[in-house]
Picture 1 (cartoon, one colour):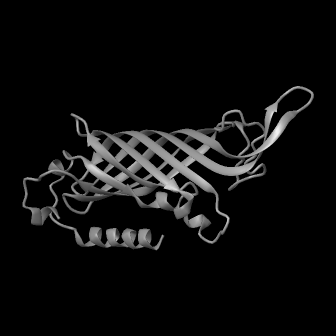
Picture 2 (cartoon, helix red, strand yellow):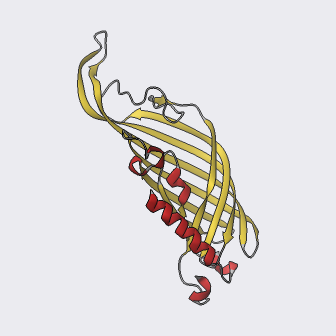
Picture 3 (tube, one colour):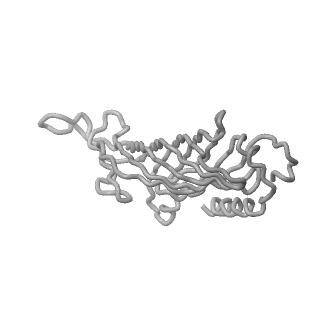
Length: 236
């Protein structure tokens, strides 16, 4: 985790000292590679990166983010000896419309679809050949997996701020709805129990859960790809 914190502050410093001449029309024609530092500090932590691609009308763009994380580099479990074996995969797909533009920043509204898959692994005694009045035929100590699948829709509002032709910061906030589904991913295993109470204020019991409100807030650090007409000294 110290490595990620050092990298985060190094990026902030590089953005601060990279302030240079800006050609907004040219910058907005380029694909932007992005990194989301705050996703490392999420409960379901991921290293998340993405690309923003301008469409023919550059007021519209598509942004696709993907992330991968494991509880071994989750700051929330750093002090716990018995940390869960949890893997997270996350995808965010976003369509943006930039409705206001100035030389050093743009404002946008966006619609976003989020999908998140969290898989937790444990070794426990589970019932086999269960059913009927006799219950389970026998119990077996085996590795089991539980999956949490989350889908969400967000409406977002944000600002893309330019430090130079190549470097930018994207600030955003959004609201929406999300729904979770939890199920066992181990074939032929009955009575799988993962945190039957609550884990981080949410249940891990198998089932379909009600739609609940969702909040999205954070920022991206961006680097534009490709060649610029200006000299490299102006773009860095």
